[in-house]
Length: 120
Image (cartoon, rainbow, N blue to C red):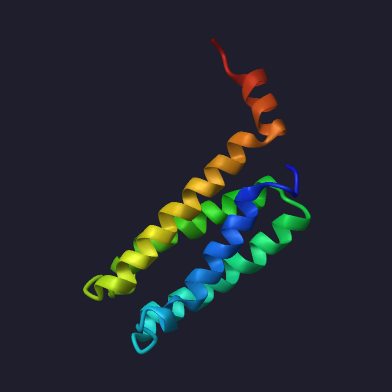
């Protein structure tokens, strides 16, 4: 994968948004929701910064896992009733998953593997 993909930069900004969102959206006092945003947001920022330097399939798969966690986290951590925090987690999760899948689809090695192993 190339390090110049816009998905990695957008993923970095999405992680930064998630990290800052408890303060910007005024849910920093909701401990489960806020800590979820801090931890997952920081992880996204770190992984996407690394991907800007050297992107791999594992980074995209990890992003997908974090996106799925964000979708489930309001229910698992019990902050589904806090609408702003829950919707933020779900929307960011969907964005992260879309960016990761898009990144995988643009990967030359994955397309070559698919072509070599897809039976028509």
